[in-house]
Length: 196
Image 1: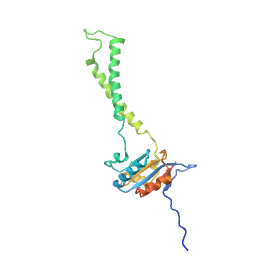
Image 2: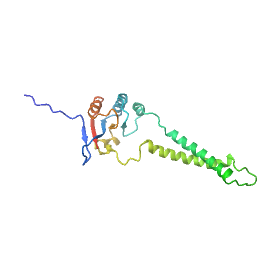
Image 3: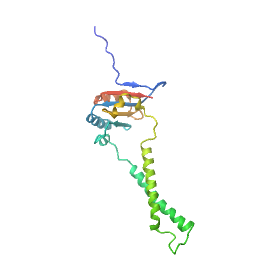
Image 4: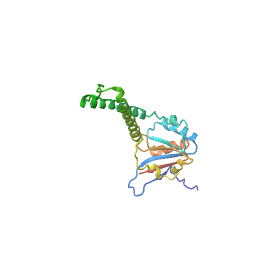
């Protein structure tokens, strides 16, 4: 008489203490090498996932292309900030010196471009820096005080010697069971679902 087969779960589950009716927040899959991660990233991209990321202990050349990451719009935000600063500096000085409070000094014009360049330049730099800093924070979704990935002991190896793919539950294709099977099929060594 054969023993009944036990059904091994497709993934480990991590649940926060005291949570009532926990729902999955993120699914993580572990890979041993960068080549495995690159191959898996291409397959995850081709599967149509949108809210997912790769985590590596060092930069992996070509990973952005494998993930299908589009170029960032941050340079355009910085350019807009710089253009606003330059034009704003010239308009501010034109209004102050030529219209609001014209003051004749030795027959010089009330407003001249060469005399206004230093202030316009400084405002260009200032608003470009604000655009870079604020745009980076906004595009990265920061500040974020907590990330559910930090509850996983396994994920700590992402800074040492392991490679991970995380799929957020907000993704329209997220289903813990089918996603776990898919990730196992493309070479994941271990899979965890982190619940709220």
